[in-house]
Length: 214
Image (cartoon, rainbow, N blue to C red; front, side):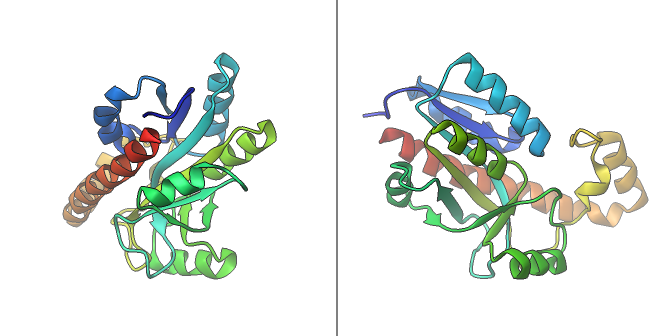
């Protein structure tokens, strides 16, 4: 039996949501919202959605950079507000509990990830869910952050995505194209990242659909 009541499922970018959208057809009370990257976009999207209709629960989901060296690519990690019934559901779906840090920028290099691990003690890093979870806490809405590791603690990203962002945290595809024209050697790494993130999104979708079954 599916979970009763409205579930809002937040993602930052369409690539994170795509496999879940294919699988969620049987869950008519699950609404997917793609916020855009970063704190401001996620805050704006959250308020707009909750003002329209208060949900029974919120899942804030997507990719994460691994900080714990023990976390392999594709591992699904979660954190919940204290006492949330979502905790047991996520454990049952195969996700593992952990500490997830919400950052202002993409962690690009192994060195950056190591510094974040030392500074925060977190197992993974993302850019939106911490904000949404705090907002849910203020409104007493059950919430879980559910993230899949798209790049492990020992992996550098093939490109510095921070340098390619617009001021409102959207990827500037003209900058990306220019960057690849200047450094075509980065293309294979970027294609590999696309394959890895697609596989990670499938792993995330499998966990989320199991949670929604209740």
